[in-house]
Image 1 (cartoon, rainbow, N blue to C red):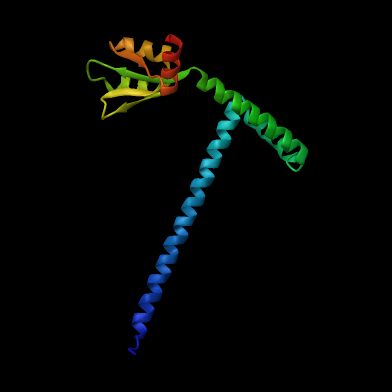
Image 2 (image 1 turned 60 degrees about the vertical axis):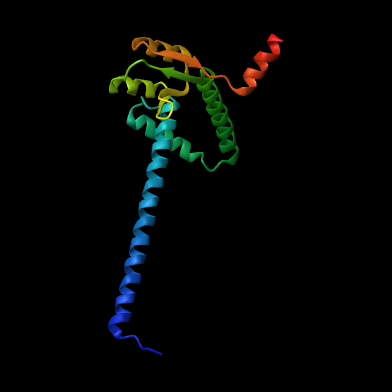
Length: 168
């Protein structure tokens, strides 16, 4: 059995130490990313609740009063129910006017206009060479008219079957 020299063992230990330090740094970075994400989510919720325009001290006072009640399970259950209801209504309202659309333009678009299309909920399909996505038809039709584009509604297979059955 070959014996390892002290230098080889020291080298191996240094490699292990470096690997552990790298893993620790990755864990810290992941924790920092999770915290940042949570802070952004909290800020978004404050904005959605309409509290973003409050003066800083007023907002902080309101949050402190919430924190005082955070131990009360009944209040938390009530907050959870109210929050879920509001978020569900906002999601339904947001998606109520969107539908699958395809938009075709006769010529390449300027970058600022493409940015506006993305803002409306569309994305560029490289394979099919058209814009597509879930968006509000009226908004997209107005945008498309600016650049002589055509908008087409996309129907699902179930909708097509229903249309065929009603025509028969």
